[in-house]
Image 1 (tube, rainbow over the protein chains, first blue to last red):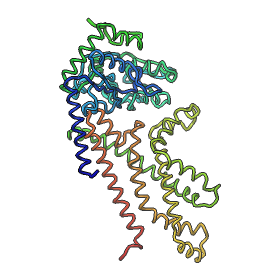
Image 2 (cartoon, one colour; image 1 turned 90 degrees about the vertical axis):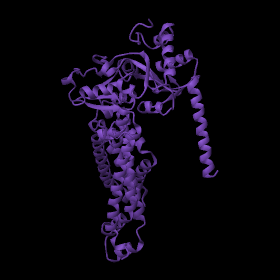
Image 3 (cartoon, chains in turn red, cyan; image 1 turned 60 degrees about the vertical axis):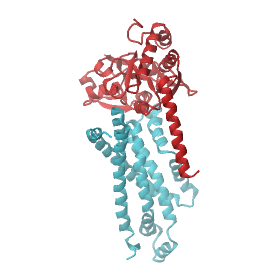
Image 4 (spheres, one colour; image 1 turned 45 degrees about the vertical axis):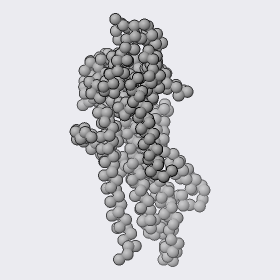
Length: 266
Length: 228
C-alpha cells in the first residue's frame, strides 16, 4: 500500500468509526463505561483478569434498566476524565465523588453511594489526628482524589504527602512501612486493606470526614458535558434500582451497612 | 492550550527539574565509578574474573529499568528481614531506591561501552607502550584507558541521554521529578496536553544541554585527531 492510499484508508476508517459513534450517541442502545479496577471492593480485577466489584455490578444493573448493551473499559484513575472527554467511553462508573472541580469538566448524575473518609495508622502508632499530631508525618493518598485535595489543602504545609496512582499501591507502601498514615474512603480501606491479611497491623484512627467542601455530595456517574439524555437515563435508572430493591440486593453482597448513606428511595 | 495552568505550576516543575538533575547526575557518577573496574574485569580472559561482572551487565542490560526499579522498591519491601535490618532506612525512601536502580543500570551500560572501547585499542599503541618499557598498570593508566575513554565518549553521550529519559520512571514510585510534576498537574486540572508538553519541554532542554556539553568535550579530547 502506498502512503497515500494508506492515509486514505485510515481516514475512511476514522470516519466510519466516527459515524458509528454518533449513531450510538442518539439512541444509547450501546454504552461504553469507564471503570478503574484497582479499588476494591468497588472495582477490582480477579486472578482471571475479569472485572468485579460494587461499581461493576451497579454499572451492569443500570445498563439492564436502561436497556442498553454495555462494554466496560478499564482505565487508570489519572486519565479517567481525559479519556471520557476523548470519547474512549461515554460514562464513568468508578466511585467518583461529585466535586466542584470535577463538575467543571464533566456532568454528574445523582449520587449512587456516599461514604465518609478516614485515616488509618499502624495499631501501635498512637497518632492524634490534629495539626500538631500530624506534623512531620508521611501520609499516603491516591493522587487527584478528594482525599488528596483534602490533605493537600488542610495539612499540605506540615505533612509529607505521598501520592499514588492507585489505592493498591498506597496499601503496598503502608505494609512496607513507607508511610505513617493512609487517608482514604473508609469503606474501600476497610474492605480493601484493613480486613485483609496484609492490613492486619493497621486500624482506623480519628473521626469520619464528610465536609462537602472537599468530599462532595457523594459518588456519582460522570458523563461528558451536555450529554443530558444519557445523564437523565442514568438518573432514572438509579432511582428505579433504589426503589425496587435491586440496589439493596447488590449492596448487601458487599456491605453490612447502608452504603447509600440515607434510606433507599423516597 | 491553557498557558495559565503551566505558569501557575512552574515552581512545581522547577522542583521536579531539580530532582531529575540530582538523580541523573548522582547515578551517572556512581555508574561511572562502577563501570571502570567492571569493564576492566570484563576484558580478562579468565572466566573466574569476568564471570560475575558479566552476569551483572547481562542482567541489567537484559531487563527494563522499570522492572529493576520495581524489584528494588517494591521487591525489597516485601521481605521482613530486610525491613527490620539496618539497610531499610535506605530502601524505605523512594529517592534512594531510584538512585540505586539508576546507578546499577547506567553502570552496566557504561561498562559495556568501555569494554568495547578497550578491546578496540589499536595494537600499535600497546606495542609502542611496551617498547617504551611500561609495565601493565602503567600501560593501562597512561595509554589504554585514556585512549578508550576518548573512543567511548560519543557512545557515552548517548547513554547519558538515555539515562535522563529513563529517569522518568522515578515518577512511578511517588517521586516528583519532571514527569511527576506533569502527572500531578494532569491529575489536578485534567489537562494532559498542557501537563505533558511542559514536562517534555523540560526534558528537551536538558537533552540539548547534554548534547552541547558532550560536543565541547569531544572537541577537547580529540583535538589531536582534528584536521587542521
